Length: 81
Image (cartoon, rainbow, N blue to C red):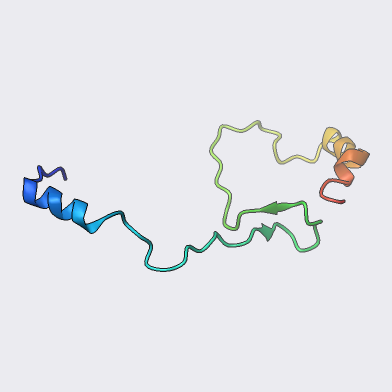
């Protein structure tokens, strides 16, 4: 809703000064590990992940390419160090 302010209303707003927080500003909550058994580098914000498609038909299949990638050393050491 847009309202045209008169001069008195504008003066009241200016007299109030800038808005101030009512208390200390709290930082966002800590990131949660996706799986307690995963290394610390596997953090993501809490809550469900929502995706929209379309997706490839084989997105959920555990094909040989996925198994090859999971065996590569650089993938097995992510988040360590």
